[in-house]
Length: 207
Ligand SMILES: O=C(O)[C@@H](CO)OP(=O)(O)O
Image (cartoon, rainbow, N blue to C red; front, side, top):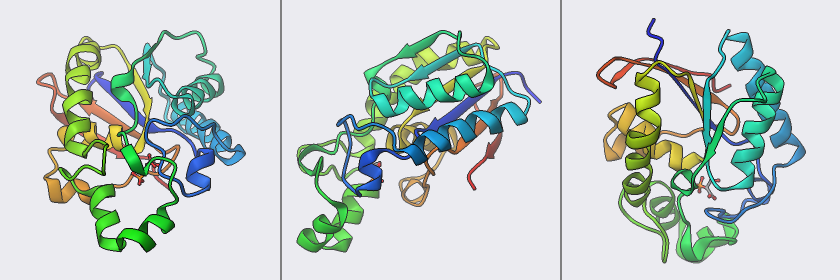
């Protein structure tokens, strides 16, 4: 197995996940369940025998707090942590703060699914997944990947759609393939990369 370790983890449940609201760049806290999910992720990573050299997260509290809780659980709370907006959730634009069921009642199930999961249709005033790839991927290539290739063990705590953007590229998924790829809150995905930056193995710790 290669030493080129990259672990991606979506934040634990947030207050707005619980309330079923479009969140995007808004900044709600974790719920008590979200805190438990983050701690559980830390325990699972430790049980896998993993440890890290450097961590990346977004500008948003739910991801940063998830990372802190994971590191605390692993006894690794002194690691360098790099926060960057490039890893923020996809911007939901005018949908931010709206209830997802209310949106389905107003615009229809199919339209809301297209906004939530299509590759290149942005929600009104927001980012498509393609737009999210366009800002998250250059950051990954410039800041994260070189460290993984140098043998630094990297943990990234971010968001459903900013991580789906990276996973689409890592797993070479088509626009159709990425529509079906969901990430559970607090569930780590463990990648080992080849020297040419392709994926050697993937282990999804989703329940
Ligand atoms: O609201 C959001 O920002 C995201 C993640 O919770 O939702 P969705 O699953 O609709 O992409």
